Length: 437
Figure (tube, rainbow, N blue to C red):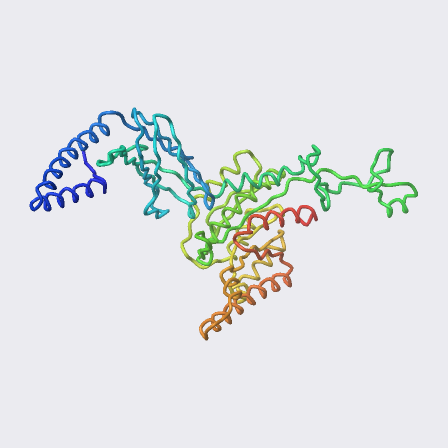
């Protein structure tokens, strides 16, 4: 058993030594020092007895088996005191090394009752995280000794793509049901119907669907009939090349794209569409064919959890070849990538055009928020003027990329990592509302 002592013990010890030294010259001080030493010895015995013989503390850590990447995840520490007195407890939880928490502790005065402490952890990369022990350092009101109690044995948690955001944005997917129930009113563009045929008008048909051209030809009222929109394929194409390793607020563009892919896949399936996934670098890595079965979203989540980059250059030609062979139905393809210059786009633009010829392609690329911050600051030196000039050139390159994609007839989404989820969802809703697919 290891014995730890507090600063109070050392302070009393120093005081006793000083008193005995002075007592060599003043007899009264020497007598007081001897009495104080005896009282200190008794206090030490009492402190030890109270700490080790009159109770203990049960410690339990409660957290999810899976953490959501990029989100705040709650961890609970449950404490149950078996002491028959109040004790002061300092909790030190051995958090995973990825968080680099050097001085992570909580202090609480614990009565003979259950108490719960909680804290938040925000992981910024996927993978397995290892918790250590939860240690309780217990002291009494005397405060000479510290008893260390180990609890909450080591455990592993897996950090998955952001399923917390996925559940949050599910509300957008069920918004139509909320409207039907009269809970809120949403203005919609277009509808969720597809044209079927032209038939004779009968009483009860919607007058707004009357086809006046056909009516003029036939000489009596004709109306357009619609059927419910068929399920459509939505593919997320994730670029895993080294350009996607650029970090923003602790997370890489790859992880932002993975989180957004999980969110939009879940919403697409809630809307009745079929979600699929393709990841690529210099070659195709992972493919999940579009489907809407119940286990599809979990299959996509597991696939996204294991995505890593080997820092190769991107090759979109391989994506086009793979799509020709494996994706037969016209689909909406959301390609998450990051072109930093017009030259990098021009190398891949012919293949983007080929993909867009058969499918509806939306290129999602990222605005460099660090450059935006740089341009907002006032330049006070030659070096800062030079840095801002480079920043403006980088920004102009991004705008040229957008214009070049537009001239090629390819839809694009130029967004920040922080707004990626919302902007992708809005683009998907816009495509559905305008029936562009």
